Length: 340
Image 1: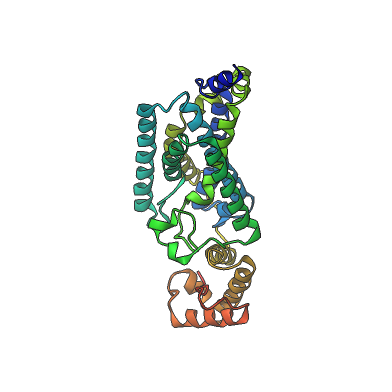
Image 2: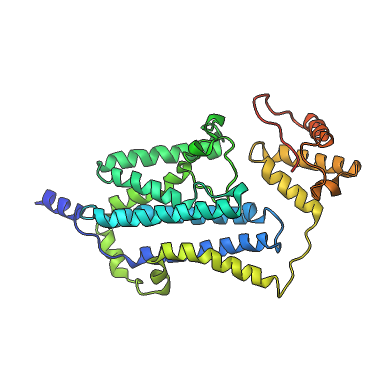
């Protein structure tokens, strides 16, 4: 009798959990605030690179982690007692189409940093992967989740970059998450390590259905809040919010003119942001300061910033080589940093 009860609990229809919708809606608002900081930087109110460094960088990663965790939970909730294939393929098609629109739009507007695998691309790919794991025994999902967690910890804290390879740098492979120097993008969310919060959400949701927790959470309510209403319309909000926010930031320039940027601070920030993709942070600070000093000493800084002197100019190449020689040399197999 106990076995039958356990099996019935494991396969019963999922209740509507308003807290999940509320959490998703809250994450959407957080995402919008981060994107607005990017828009203000784009319009010149913040120094270049502000949205990609410091606490804003941590904030962005926390938002993405929350989103993907909720996607994993929601996939489990939407697939009980069994996968509803028409609904799944409809949702997947909408997300994939939206991801394609984002790629096409950014390729046209910002071709140097277009979004070739952003958060929508990741959600679409992980949905396909996740629906396969829903049909596998729970221990398999738990094992993969554990492996992803261990890999993320090792790659982030123990031996950073140990899993990376320059062979995986091209865009058609970089989305896997093991590229050493992937092409820049305004939103890059590769499968590794971002599959980790997704699988964690799936694993915890599947474990929760072996208990009474889903029903207790459903009884808690909060599904009628404004955040929950927004959370149930997440895709529409995602597609609409950024054009609206950038229009607001643009309109603000007619009311309060953005401050003129400090060319020295701008150069150092851009140089460090670009350099740290390939080199260590401490090495890049020394390199960028050295190239700045050399540019100013040779009276090349202003024409270089104005674009009158290009990065491939022999004088720029010479001072870059000189600065590279002064700091800790990088291994021969790695590309040398260049001033930006």
